[in-house]
Image 1 (spheres, protein in one colour):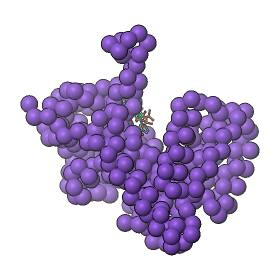
Image 2: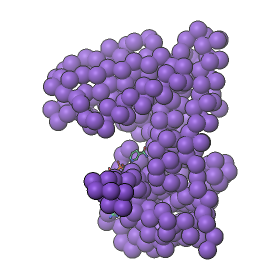
Image 3: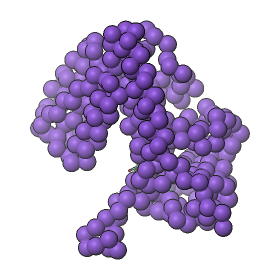
Image 4: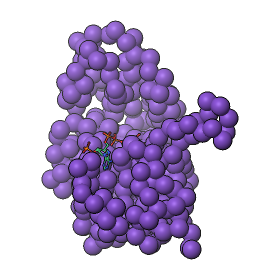
Amino acid sequence: MPQAQIIDGKAIAESVREEIRNRAASLLETTGKRPGLAVVLVGEDPASQVYVRNKDRAAEACGFHSVKHTLPADTSEADVLALVSELNDADDIHGILVQLPLPGHIDESKVLRLIRPDKDVDGFHPINVGLLTAGERDSALVPCTPAGSLVLLKRTLGETLSGKSAVVVGRSNIVGKPMASLLLQESCTVTIAHSRTRDLPDVVRSANIVVAAVGRPEMIKGDWIKDGATVIDVGINRIPAPDLGPDKTRLVGDVAFEEALGHAGAITPVPGGVGPMTIAMLMVNTQTAARRLMGLPDDK
Ligand code: NDP
């Protein structure tokens, strides 16, 4: 059976970051200014700490001005809102990211809605959601994971996705829905599947492009994949790996990777596929926000 091409998300993410580094250097040369990213972390969630550290490091590696605000878990909602307001007004900050989840006593949507839409580099503000849905992607800031998934698709299939059938499995606000909007704007024929979808294997089998964003380890089986389809596996699931030793775990996606290799034309691995693109696209969004706030045209 032919083996699928494995899409090297790590290498593609590195090339995107390299491009951003170069553009940040020329921005500094022409304006004397750097894109500025502020990341806010409330509490001590270990996974969030790792994400925030990685984002901060990536921003510094791109030559950005990077600020990290780490607040204790019992910080009041009012204090978080006050910090966001301060960052909204800060001239040297162009991107604000509040790491989710926030502790239970803080209303997440209240915090996210306070972030200025033109500094909302996560793309979660209703204004950005609305712009993307209305087909005005070029004025929006687009959520990083779906934006990165689209870059992987374009680098794999070429610029034209027009006319292809795409199935997005998952309808979350951070991945599934914005992914579907992006594919629709690329003139794909898009189906959004979810936990109530009937005959999911057949729905998936109908697609030239499959984006899996479910959060269930290896749920999408190899024989659900149409021969030659391109598969983007967004899922990151940690499962026990007794073969590696007691208490050991490994990361797997939402697609049964080994099985899918025999059917797909191209597929992203987990890890090393979509994951690295998410942070790369955060850098893209921060640079885009900075250029817009400086009154400069978007880099194409
Ligand atoms: P959510 O839990 O918010 O959404 C999961 C979606 O999958 C829901 O729409 C749900 O449907 C659907 N679903 C659940 N079970 C089934 C099923 N049996 N059949 C069909 N659909 C099902 O997850 P996220 O969108 O936040 O994340 C999805 C995955 O992507 C996770 O593994 C997450 O870790 C990963 N992720 C990876 C990122 C990266 O950087 N690579 C970034 C963000 C997420 P319904 O709405 O009906 O409940």
